[in-house]
Amino acid sequence: MTNKLRKMLLAGCLASGLGLTTQVNAEELRIGYISPVTGIFAQVGKDMVDGFQLYLSEHNNKLGGMDVKFIVEDDQGKPDAGVTKAKKLILQDKVHMFIGGLLASSGYALAPVSTSEKTLYISSVSSADDLTQRQLSKYPYFMRTSWTSSLPHHPLGQWACDNGFKKVIIIAADYAFGYETAGGFQSAFEACGGKVIQKIWPPLGTKDFGPYIPTFSPMLTASSRPWSARWRCSFPSNCAPPASKRRSWAAA
Image 1 (spheres, rainbow, N blue to C red):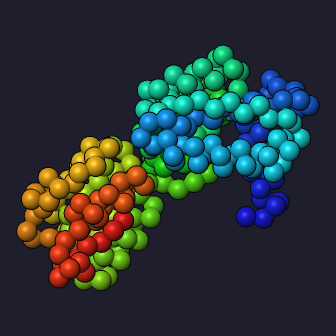
Image 2 (cartoon, one colour):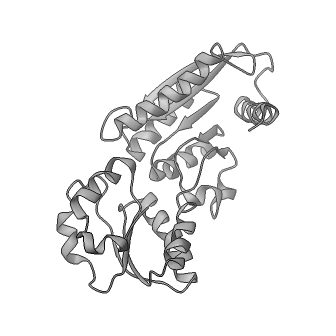
């Protein structure tokens, strides 16, 4: 991204966040940041906060020439807690914008707050598809700077089809991100002639996937397992097939 484009995007964000009622020469820009800094997603949440703070420190804690007051709120990876924190940031701390939310389900919960309170919400990580697809018109104060859940899984579905896989089961977390990643894979895979014969939805936070192995359909030729980072490592150790069948084990 060029410096010119960065400046244009920053100017747009600041203009939307500050709104028409704020003086152009405001000395302080108040930014709320919602992140799961405790709970099962704490490490990812800490990385989110550290990344934003690193950028601020590299720019003398200024954006658009204004000093930044950076207020972090912990949503513990819980959408309802995120809504409470967002309202606190807007109504009590008087932030000009709020950023963050890790889970797709958090994004779906936070976007309506931005609309009702007429406050800019920038989704830096939450990848909820419909916020910039089917529900885009509902959220005029919403901006996305990252990906959408289904996006990388369309080419994965195409790849699986191109490599001769015909029947696949999908194992994904039982919440918005899991549904959307699975949908992206299935859309491309079945458009190419493949068939998803089974979908399994372990609860978010599952650590032992062993009980799900006996439920796998004997008809499968591959499995796709889109998952959050924390469980991307534990799943293979729980469910890796024998060496003779590893060719049919597709990771997402």
